[in-house]
Amino acid sequence: MSFFKDFKEDFSQAVNELLPADEGLGGEESLEANADDLLINTLDSVDLQEELDKMTSTFEEQEEKEDAVSSFFNVDREEEPEATETAEVTPEEEAVEEIIEEPAAKITERQQSFAEKEEVRMNEDNNRRTPDFDALFNDDVQPDDEVSTITKGMTISGDIESTGSLNIDGKVNGNVTTRGKIVVTGRLNGNSNAQEFFADSAKVKGEVSATGKVKIGDGSVIVGNITATSAVIAGAVKGDIDVHGPVIVDTTAVVVGNIKSQSVQINNGAVIEGFCSQVYAEIKYDDLFGDTEG
Image 1 (cartoon, one colour):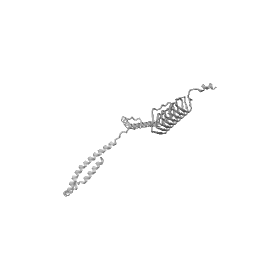
Image 2: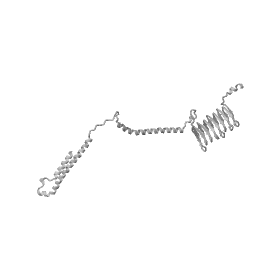
Image 3: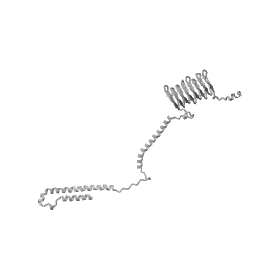
Image 4: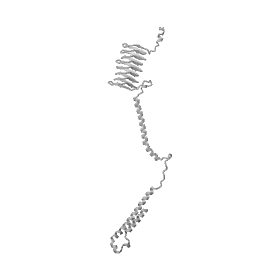
């Protein structure tokens, strides 16, 4: 307020100095000579005084507003308590934290779920690509029901391993190992190892090994040794036959090789070029011929 008061006093003094005093007018001549200036100054003095009052009022109002704003910002506010570990959280603050943390938690949950699913998928893929063939012929493991077929006109070059059964209607150049059954109606150039082996009008060049029975049908040609629990031979076999159970040599059979078995049935018309020995028969030869030899 002091600034505006000083400004008003200085401005009033300057206006009074501009206005001519009564003593300095110098009579009528002086009044006539300076009539116009006197009239202007008189009018100006009235207007200036009015305008001065208006400006003073405006300045005072502005200064009051500035004082009010200044006093508002200079009010001593209560200091907020410092946050401590034991400070209680209001429900509003908890709601805000939940809103902020919920999207992050969902994103983390989705990332973990995706990582777990991806790990399971990779393990399944690895298991399919690398089956446990060491336990393939474990008696506790049962063969799968799945049957794979190599169709006619298809040729496979390389070894084949499967936990199920396999039908070979085409041609395979390689060893075949399965937990189930092998049925060959085409050509197999390689060793075979399965639970059961059937050949029907097939051409096989390689060893035939089965934990169960082997059947060589009419029109089949096997070049290789045969090992099984039981065997029925109706085709041509060039190789030794080693069977711990019974062997049936059918009418159409041609065997070029030795037969070792528990028992042998040779039907009329069969041709055998080799020795037949029933070494697995449950007979004690020493007990039968021991006294005769002495």
